[in-house]
Structure formats: C-alpha cells, structure tokens
Image (cartoon, rainbow, N blue to C red; front, side, top):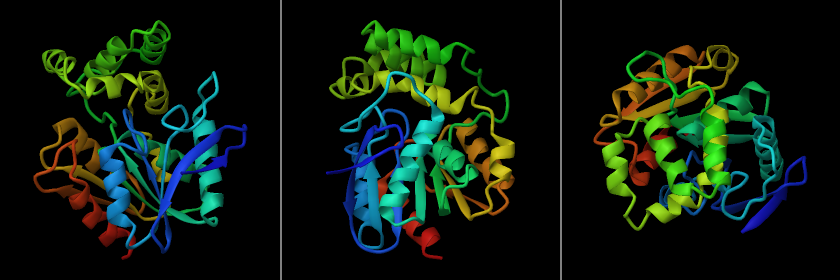
Length: 261
C-alpha cells in the first residue's frame, strides 16, 4: 500500500501494480480497493497497464474530513494523476463513472474513460430518490443505524426490492456493506437526483466507453446507452451474460480492447 496527499491534506491509499500506461480504477458505492471485483480487475489489467487501485476518501485506508464535497474527490483523483505521471486512463464502476466524468469535465489530464453501469436515470421507469436522500443516509450512519442506511440506499437508490434486501441482511457479507454505510451519503451527493449530466458529458472530448451488462436492470442499460450517445466521442457496449455483479475477467477484456485501441 502507498499513499498520496490530496490538496486538503487527506491521505489517499492506493495499490500500484503492473507496468505500462497508467490506469486508475474508481470504485462505486459499497466499494473499496480490496473489493473482490476491483482487486481482481486490477490483477487482470496489470499485465498491460500500471494500475492504480485506490480507496476513495472515507473508505479502506484512506482518510476523510467531516464535510463531503465532490470537488475534494476530484482533488483526490488529481493527486493520483500527478503521482502516476500526469496523464492517465480511468475506469469508473457505477457511481465511480460519474466521478470520472466530473473529473474529466473539470479538465484533469485524462486521455480515455471507461465506465460500467453509471446509475443515471433518463426516464421515469423507476422513482427518483427524494431530495433529502443524502441527509437521511448521513443521519442513519451518524446514529449508528448502519444496516438501515444500507437498506435505504439499496431500496431507494439502487431500486433493489425491499424483500430481497430483507433476505440479504442475515448474510455474512452484510457486515462489509455496513462498514461503508457512512460513505453512502457521499455517493448520493455525487449522483444528485440521478439525472444524466448532459452538459458535463458534452464537455468531455476524450474517447469514452460506457458499458452495461445484458442482464443489468433495464433502467441502467438505458442510462448507459444514452450516456454514450450524449458523449461527443462515446461508445456503448453491452457485455453478454453480465449484470451488476460483473465478472472482472470479462470486464478486463473489454477494457483492454478499448484502452489500447
């Protein structure tokens, strides 16, 4: 593990592996660098790139500050880009894709972006989270009602049926989800009301690949396709037999094909 200091003094932890052009992996909600998908993806990409797999602030071994600000997360990426040599490719998983888009729109030195299942809502096929969604998540975490925060995020933010979430709560992995409950408000702030950020996407001139899985929820598939169509140099790809729990080996093939093209 290594660390880099962000502009506000927060230490950001990362693992570096492989050799080649730098590639930064940006996790989404419930994700940190030790998450199996992110760790395995880093391993798959290391033969082709110098991979930076990091903990977003508030997660894993990275530090945090009391008040969340999207701009500070972009600053974290800027520090990582400087550490990597000043010009990078970026992959964003889920809401991590929106963070990558925001960083590119701010002008960070990013040459290519790939994203999987960015959770935008481009139609009314499912209800949007309420305006106080982030505040409710933060309040539950502050009250140490971490399980309730996870449930609220899954049901209201991700659209997972409540009965499915109820079945998940006794599972061994639930404790890992609860350990990241305090960061769910961060992802809520990052996504806002989940509206596709049209102007932000139109400001991104670099090549972007937006992916979904053929078995992903329809609203996410529509979002991926619409985002790709909005981006000036956007491409769209649906991965066969994949859903939100994407196979890192399958994802790595698509990433490599795009990033070395």
